[in-house]
Length: 223
Image 1 (cartoon, one colour):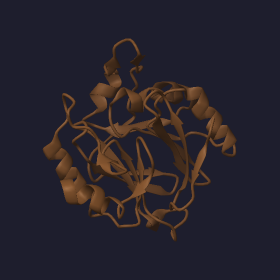
Image 2: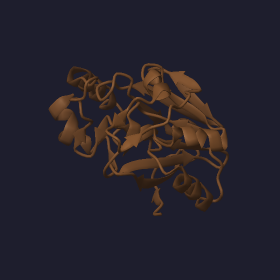
Image 3: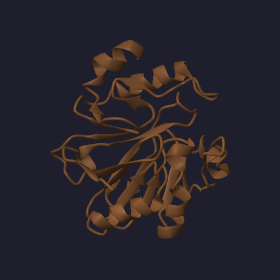
Image 4: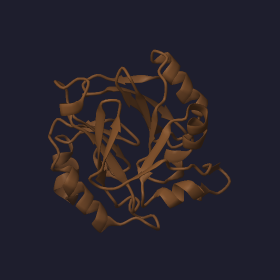
């Protein structure tokens, strides 16, 4: 297990790369609470990472969208820790049915969603306030979670965006799935383009980036 550290964010961040699609699974928090973002699978590895990171408890599970590779370990982690699952109201039915299947390779367990959110909501976790940004395109209910340094453990550092499969290093999430939409994706990217340049973008796959870095690579092309 390799647990990576992101130093410049206004919250504490660690992440793992797990699963057959090499998902980035983020652990974010402060001294009082920790959340996991899009746990693809291997719940035992995620629990071991929390132990390695100072024996932290798991308090919340953020799901940016309903695809199986972002929800695969959510139910197991919820049962093991009691952590509350947070996801968009739009994608919740898919998560709770867990009907995202790729042949017989992977089948995510149905997972109850404890809090259904929408664009503009705020998710509070032990002094941390995450703003929900509705960013449809990859799925109808895709969301990003944005953390402004104003309420952060490290207010002198950069804002953080949990981007899921909306914005990547040099590209966007796919929109050619059955419920994807490029017009929606363009509108979502325009919304993300309004964030501060120094915002650290934590994507669901591939390397980390910033809003500034994607102005030429992505926003000028799509937003």
